[in-house]
Amino acid sequence: MPLSQLSPTQKRKPRPKEGNTYDLIILGSGIAGLAAARLAEKDNKSVLVVDKGRRLGGRVSTRRKNGFLFNHGAQFVTAKGNEFAALLADARKAGILKDWRIDPAKTVQIGTQSMSDLPQFMARGLEIRQQIEVTRIAHIGPNIGFFSDAGLIACGRQAIVSAPAPQTAHMLANIYPDLAATAELAKYDPCWTIMLGLEADIEPFGQSQDQFFPIRNEAAGISLAVPEPLRFVYQPDLIPPTPSALTIQASGKWSQQYRDEDRQTVIAQLCTIWEKISGQPLPTILDASAHRWLYAKVTEVANENTPPYSDDKKMAIAGDWLRGPRVEQAFDSGTAAYRTLC
Ligand SMILES: Cc1cc2nc3c(=O)[nH]c(=O)nc-3n(C[C@H](O)[C@H](O)[C@H](O)COP(=O)(O)OP(=O)(O)OC[C@H]3O[C@@H](n4cnc5c(N)ncnc54)[C@H](O)[C@@H]3O)c2cc1C
Image (tube, rainbow, N blue to C red; front, side, top):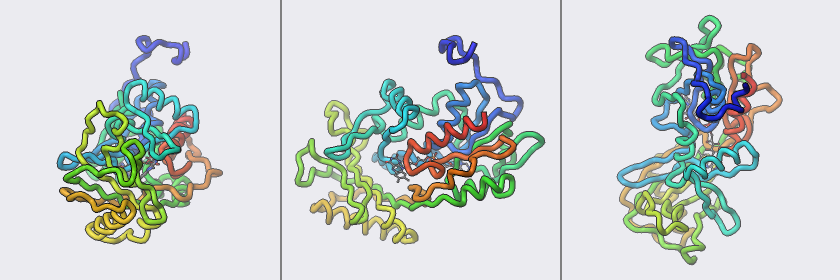
């Protein structure tokens, strides 16, 4: 009987790994890697996801610091295709996502508490090892071995690498040079993000509370500046999990220009721009930090005419850099990578 016709209680357990060998190993617990892993798990394959970050989700990320919460990676998600829309619908049903009016004309979806709610939802039931940096990938007999500096992590009969393009290119240069060459074609803008913990809330500037939207002013250097409590403005019954936090993300052009600037200068500059646009001084800053996303938003995707998998059908590549600069495109690349292999 096909799996899809089995009820959840009838579903077989995933095939156990044999020793340290999995059916599939995935490098990267970002949205692309998680999308592929979910399909493998549905097909009852033994699958391991390995990621060097402290938390899963890659660039869909939330940072907590000194009592403040900052969504410092992707700010929201939108769905154009059916498969990602179905995932978002499931997440909404589970109370993970909600609507957010980002400007008078646009409603998007965000995590009910934070953006990292979505990758955590996608990761349910998966075997994921965080804080392990893969430093080498090599053939071991018919399998593919993933290594850290401490030695062999595990082997996969097949594998997917979903790191940002430059890291994928570096990792696959020796073992699958064609895939590495494809990865070298992608280009990104960096994104400077500053996170400010404030003494008081930011008041709506020249607007009423229900017409208070984040600043989006690429020409001035800010792609999005979100007072984090604004994500809860239509839910007065819900207490924001963060006191007055402000996350400011610089535009791609500004981030390129200030790419190698020190953090203090970046913080000072972006605060000045924010005050100029909003026309009001920032409340007292209790905590300030900056994060530079070196590979933030894809500006040129890798050549779509090159197959994103190896001739021996053991290795596939995935990531937003194969499709476009949004979370949905990372998701689509992950599902496509899995389907080309399996
Ligand atoms: C500041 C910012 C704002 C954004 N805003 C939006 C938005 O509002 N809406 C939207 O749709 N998109 C937005 N994006 C884009 C979106 O976040 C990405 O397109 C998407 O999350 C990419 O997913 P991914 O799985 O392809 O890559 P990633 O999320 O980058 O995942 C790759 C993973 O690989 C891991 N990795 C890399 N090298 C190794 C290694 N050697 N060993 C182990 N692990 C490794 C990394 O730790 C990472 O977790 C934004 C991005 C940024 C940076």
